[in-house]
Image (cartoon, rainbow over the protein chains, first blue to last red):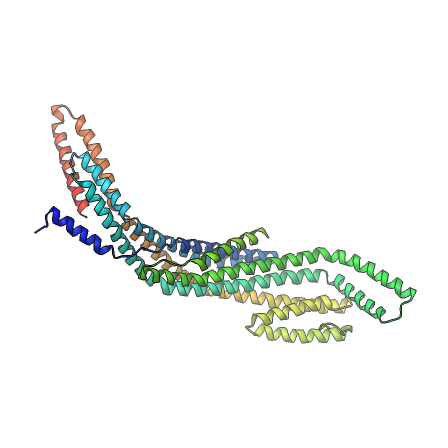
Length: 302
Length: 166
C-alpha cells in the first residue's frame, strides 16, 4: 500500500535528514587549473627544445623531437580534460537543488500547457530541491571516489613517465645548447688563440725589467687585444644568449617536472578529500602554477 | 692554473688531445650524462686554447670539435630514443584519462538531470504545437484529425507522467 500525502511528506523529510549527514564536496578548480598549466608547460618545454635543436643546425633531430613529443603533449591534454570532467562532477554535485528545480519548472510548464492544476507544487518542489541537493552530493562523491581511486595508479604512473620524458628533454636541451656553443667557439678559435698568445707574451714581458722597448710592445699588445676583443664580442654575446635560453628552458622543464610530481599527490589528496568529505589544500599546486606562468612567458620572450 | 697552461708545440697539444679523446670514449660508453657534458666541454676548451693556430694545430682542433659534436649528438639520439620508447605506455595512459573523462562527463550530466529536463522541455514544445493545431481545426471535415491530435496530447500526458516518475 502506498503511503498517503502526509506520510509521503514525513518520509521525504526523514530521507532529507538522513542524507544531510553527507558533508560538502571539495573544490577541484585549482587542480584543473594546475593541470591546464602543466599542459602549457609541457607544450612550451617541447617547443623550446625543438627551437634549440633548430638553432644548433640539427633540424632533422628537431623534427624527430617535434613528432616524438606529440604523445607527451596528448597525455597532458587528456589529463586536463580529465580534471575538467572531475571538476564538472563536483560542480554538478553541488548544483543538485538547481537541477531538480529545472526539471520541476519544465514539468510545471508542461502541466500548465495541458491545463493540469498542480496544487501545492511549490513546497513540494522546494523539498525535492533540498533532497536533490544532498542526493546529488552523495552521488557525486560516489562517482568521484570510483573514478579517482580507479585512476590513481594511472596518475602515479603518468607522473613518473612525464618526469622521465622531461628529464630526457632537458638533457637534449643542454646538448643542443652545447652544440651551438661548440660551433660559436670554433668560429673564433683563431682570434681566441691569438688573444691567448698575446697574453702569454705579456706575461713573459712582466717577468723582465721594464725598458722603453718592452713598454712600447706592451702598449702595442694592449691595442691589438682590444681590436681582437671587438671581433669576439658579438660571438660572446651570442654564447651568453644561448646559455640564458638553456637556463630558462631548464627552469621551465624543472617546474613542469615538479608540477607533474605534485599532480599525482594532488590527485591522491582529492581522492582522500572525497572519501573524508573535506576540502583540498591546493597551495603547492597554486605556487607551481604561478611559477610556470612566469617561466613560459620568459621562454617565449627569449 | 688551468689544465691548458704549460702545453706547447704540436707534440704537447696532440698528447693532450689523446688524453681527452680517451676520456671522451669512456664518457660515450658511460650512462653518466654529466661525464659526457664534461668531456665535450673540455674538447671545446681544447679548440679555444690550443695554439699557435697553424695548420697542424687546426687539424687537432678539427678532431676535438668533431669528437665533442659526436658526443653531444649521441646523447641527443639516445634521449630521443628513450622518449619514443615511452610513448606507447604514455598513449595507453592518455586513453585511460580520456575514457575516465568521458565517463565522468556522463555522470555529471546525469547529476544535473539533463536528460529529464531536455525531455520535458521538448515534450512541452510538442504539446504547444499540438494545441495550436487543435485550435486551428474548425470544420467537420477536420473532426478526425482533431481526434487524432487529442490522442497525441493524451499520449504526451502519459509520457510526461512517465518522465516525472523516472
